[in-house]
Image 1: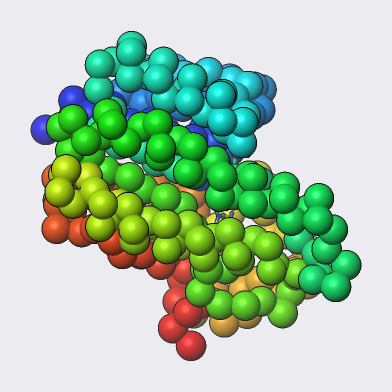
Image 2: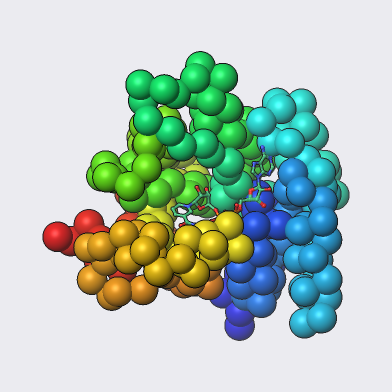
Length: 252
Ligand SMILES: NC(=O)c1ccc[n+]([C@@H]2O[C@H](COP(=O)([O-])OP(=O)(O)OC[C@H]3O[C@@H](n4cnc5c(N)ncnc54)[C@H](O)[C@@H]3O)[C@@H](O)[C@H]2O)c1
């Protein structure tokens, strides 16, 4: 028996590196996957990739989850089509970096909208469906929630991801009486199409890997594997915590 057989999983950002890996992994585990992305082209590529494996992804693109009406419509369309939601996997985000002394208000609001607001919106509208039969929320945070970085100006990103972790903890408290588990995952440096240029630049790669005990970036599939475990019946005693997946970065 596949681990997610019979589950309806809503995954955000399925056009991106980790979202694509998650869509593939969850579908291989038997879940009905409903994805969405702001970027239609990359979302279409994920659909094609899944079809080449005999898998299917429902959902739509472009969907801007930072817009409350679009986020609500995406969730409610899925609930209507499949009559249930078992898993909400908040993966999508977009960020901006810059030194705090030069960071514009516009950049700040962009980061909060696209890293935090969208997590609230999908959660807010999926909650009633998750509560019907008990469900799992997985929110992607970051090691930026747990440590600072010398490399780039990450204040807004760190604030948003720290909030994702604490938001998730509170969801666990409010979810327990209705059978909802809520977990966050904090990836370290993960190889995706977006981070590929940094990985290819030896100097930046070296800096990004500084302190990473396993001396390599993580793979999107490694994060997706962790998420599949958290969503499965093997992790039913896990709620309210954050799981770091960072090659040992935070260990030193
Ligand atoms: N790659 C890393 O090193 C790393 C490290 C720590 C945490 N993360 C987190 O992992 C998650 C996945 O990131 P990724 O590395 O796969 O990046 P990615 O850029 O490849 O994927 C993110 C996807 O989200 C989509 N998206 C962004 N804003 C959206 C919006 N408003 N509405 C709908 N879709 C939107 C993008 O179009 C993109 O396809 C993010 O939450 C990110 O912050 C990534």
